[in-house]
Length: 524
Image (tube, rainbow, N blue to C red):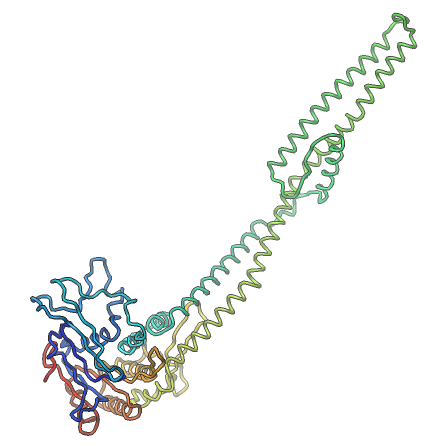
């Protein structure tokens, strides 16, 4: 896709179509492959690029940047029509794009609104489908410049993802990283918990105490008692309830036994003090009856005493049950925590690390391949800003917690690599940024995976000396000849504009040179 003509009306500085028409056809009625637009700063070069982006995509990414335009809720959104200090004529504004791939112009209209009523509301979802790639085409130069000027590698990575990267893929990577962080934190918590609840080995207890106390309880239940068996997960409250039950039954038995013993003692005393004759019974007969009564009491007393002994045993065992149960509870908790820790360490963590490594490797290859390093180095060497540093190296590093994007230039003398943002001058950084930008847009494809045939370059030659300016122009000329792509170039420097005309004259190249004679007005 190449541009044949751009028509702008009532879009910011461009008020009327007769002043806002950019015709890219040559005198031979051919579509120009190189267009240079000259205007001093403030005359509308940036507005021209904004108009093309809005006309093509129905949006302007600059207005979508919340950090710039949403400092407060009261911040007024920049309107498309900025000519509001005068009474606006009742005519419709528009941006009309004539391109080679469409039989009719792509047209976007601006509604007539009331005075100071917004005519544009920025929403990302408004961007025309299958034209999102055009954002990078228009803004790649600015975004790459921002990347190079960033000193912090992690911040540079974040800016790359925001500008060019796969945000969904990066979000998955961040999610996995957060899960790993949470998993490690959980492992640390379990380790601390295990250290805090280790059992006290100085506590003495009978490991068979449950078997012994339950054996006595079963004997008691066989004799008609209803005592619950002690289990491992009993609480302290249940132990206290058992203690109360046992103590109550011991008191009852002691009372019954004491009463039975009193009766036996009374009978025995009566027998010792009785007279020779009692009523019609002989002494022997009466003694026999007393002995039978004593024997009956003793037969009743023996099982009661046996029962009492069993309760006494249960009571004695109960004293050792509490420390045993506490120890057992601690050991079961230690086992549960240890098993959970082992699962997180040996199963969850390796799986998460593997998933993160897979994502990191994919993102790394995606980012590094998107820079087209060989092409960057070709352009960089063509302009040759500094003889000591030739090959640009772009490495995405995931070894730290935060991913880092390193842009380095190794020293030919085997010294440490140079970080451009720290060691390079502004002109050198500008040339490096321009080399990266050119390599990216030359390889850019649209949403149908077709090559993009137009390149937009906004004021790239800043602070360069004459040699590097000439090298840059030669490079652009070479790109046009070899690739057949269309370059739309803007500059605020009139000398550069004239130099371009001499290096790529319209009579030898399909070139077109346009000037803005004043604010929002194309020179006829």
